[in-house]
Length: 234
Image (cartoon, rainbow, N blue to C red):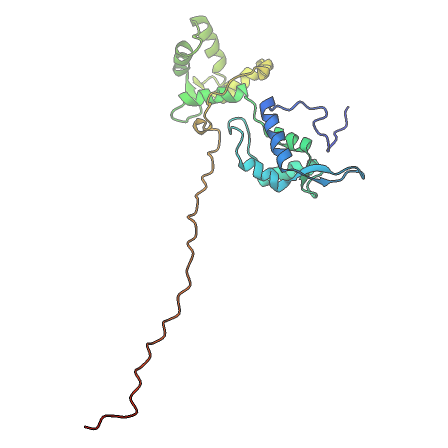
């Protein structure tokens, strides 16, 4: 079993990022890193800080449907695993590795659940047998009568005439675990339409503070006219 090297965590791992994303990450790292870390009296290694990692995440370079934007606690938890909790510095390999941890890959079980929720307009967490019959004979790859009857028999896992679709999906994957390896596409390409994705936080921009000019000092009173020493005699 290969020993995990905290300074080279990608040694036995293939990142899930596509090549274009890897190149973008490396380009950003090279532009922002500095040679601050020395390992075993070797030459200084270019690193970024945890704060710079947070700044990178704020750029929102990755689609929220395929990337989980972590909290500060989640970031520090991963940093601790890389022995970077104290130094708060990450090498290029650690930077790619820690970002790769938060990639969200499509999951057939999850997408099936979302598909059922579309038809569950009353949010009951179940559909009636007749509703399922309409779905499988109307949408997508239409089932024939025999296939529909077989599906409905398997779908009614509680035997009460209602299909609790989360139970049904679990039963499907327990009978056919190979379904976990099936690649699928996202049901919602737009993450803002996906009810399972938290909405993007709205950051209200504060108007720029207005400069308060100092109050000018009161102007000096005009000089009083001086009386003549010689007054005219009446």
